Amino acid sequence: MSGNHYKGHEVSCCIKYFIFGFNILFWLLGMALVGIGLWAWSEKGVLSNLSSITDLGGLDPVWLFMVVGGVMFILGFAGCIGALRENTFLLKFFSVFLGIIFFLELTTGILAFVFKDWIKDQLNLFINNNIRAYRDDIDLQNLIDFTQEYWECCGAFGADDWNLNIYFNCTDGNPSREKCGVPFSCCTKDPAEDVINTQCGYDVRAKPDSEQKDYINVKGCVPQFEKWLQDNLTLVAGIFIGVALLQIFGICLAQNLVSDIEAVRASCFFT
Image 1 (cartoon, rainbow, N blue to C red):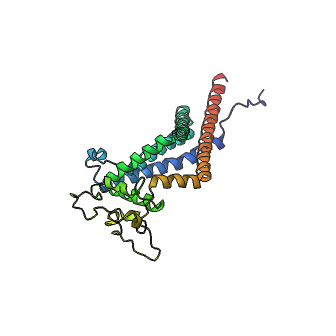
Image 2: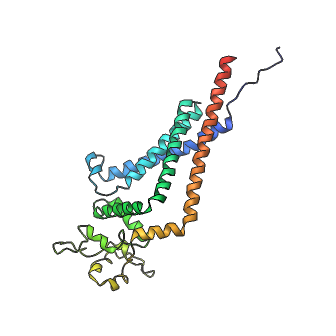
Image 3: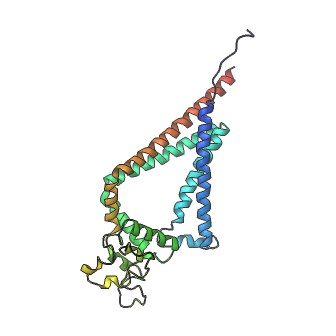
């Protein structure tokens, strides 16, 4: 009997340390994103006046860093510590949390396809709300400028959407120098210019519609975004499928590791 050895279940070291290594990157990246978000809020004085978080009428881009970083931090922590310590509770939490995210992504994609017009209306409303708050937050301002420059657009459906902003509207009582204008990011770019002319949009909407297109991009950002999606449908679909497969792969690995751990504990209990 002394020469016979009982061969029981074993925890797969490959799966264990693959999950650990993959998730520690997520954990660190999540901490970095949250740290960047906190630093940005600190620079804007938000941390000293927390009520100002809800004062902004539009989207504070820092929220993107905080939410995405927070989710990545939680997932990375659960997967990393769960795998390293062979903690089945954390591994199951990791699987369920990842499954919920996958389900929400799938549901969002289906609803976006079925309710296209409603999504377009909500996108229009979202952009217009942010146009109103354009000068209220420097991060929001930079995000809008980047969007309009990248997609060569102006406003949600056209340059006249900038009438919603108190600095750019064309009302007689508007004392702003930017009255009846648009941000510089709406202007058509001259390749010969090395320095950005931040005043290129001044008074441009006071000109006839036929002349405006010589100075600014007259197409709205919603139609331009739709066009970009159509032109890059294969790329967008590939990214979504790749992310989905990665999530499914992570769930399967975590569940496999949980099964191994529980099998080892059961064999030890009955041995």
